[in-house]
Length: 244
Figure 1 (cartoon, rainbow, N blue to C red):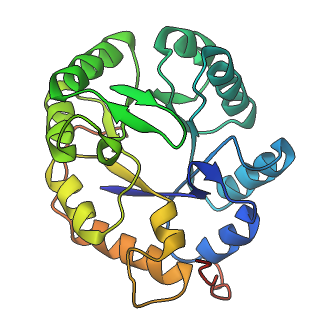
Figure 2 (cartoon, rainbow, N blue to C red):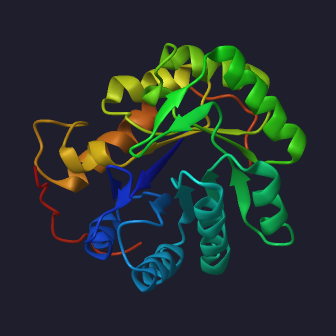
């Protein structure tokens, strides 16, 4: 299972994202993502360039709640040249925009609401949305399982896994290594962690961001093998101290 470190807190890219990226170098984090809110476009462009210079897979997750704003985020992802675009629910419009580019699209399934986002919809709704996304030609889906308001998070992961051959990413509120293991066992191909790493939730006895990321990498490495239905060095920096 892939660990995607989101340089975000409370669904916004952290303002010191470039400094945080220096902490990540050399840790072995191969998947890095951000939102297009929280910092200026020029900062996002530099952040993305540096992520790609590290050899990592890049992700932009759309959290806009209106169609026009979401499609603006899609255009920004295309301009940046991210590898994978996650989130949003306007599937046909988004696929039309990314057609002919190398950007892979993984929409939200269920009914995301508000910001920070909560997720409405039970297992049947999640499964239906997964099938619809796959039929439309999406590379996978973005499931906010632990933001669910209507169902057990792991029931949603299992329903999504049964309904799609695409890349299943579980995003949001994965705050413990136990949740990492549970998500892997339920069949996820990847998970995202942002706020929990900055808050120190993954390894409460350690006070640096690097220690939190190592805990996530260790948990992913020891997790059960996920479903086979998937997509396809530097000096250690000074510790990035967590800020409560």
